[in-house]
Length: 193
Image (cartoon, rainbow, N blue to C red):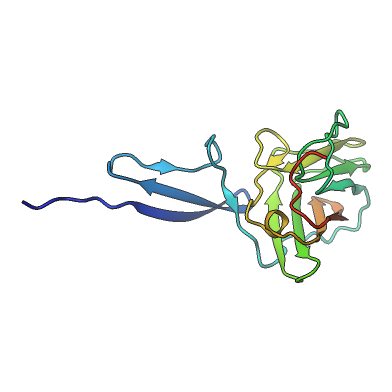
């Protein structure tokens, strides 16, 4: 008698959308009609954002008005309450120009201070427009809602025990890109301080 055995099949698909690449895993077990796919709506897992090789921001505007007023990657605080929150990549973007800051995009590089290994990430800040005289904080925390974007939990930021230096650039149509620096100290981080 011949036995039919269905092995476990694990696959990965890279999907590019919204200016970022996401890695989706599928895992089908003994029932071929059931497939578990991880996507942005899954409560158990979140998409993995992959590093990019080059900075895709091509903004040559010299019009002032866009600034990063606060970049945090350690000892983070909630911008609304000032309360301590888990470490994550977050920064506040201020628009002091007379026009709305639209088509926002972010590019950031993280570099291990000891090994000099680096990774860069790019994200279109979909859903965010900053009106004149206003500011908004964005979070790379795999959270949901406006201003929350995917974070690679396997990045240098999360895996290195060394200090990690961040260089951040934010761009909006018609405004000069804003830049900022931040640093995660040595150790694991990721907890409220």
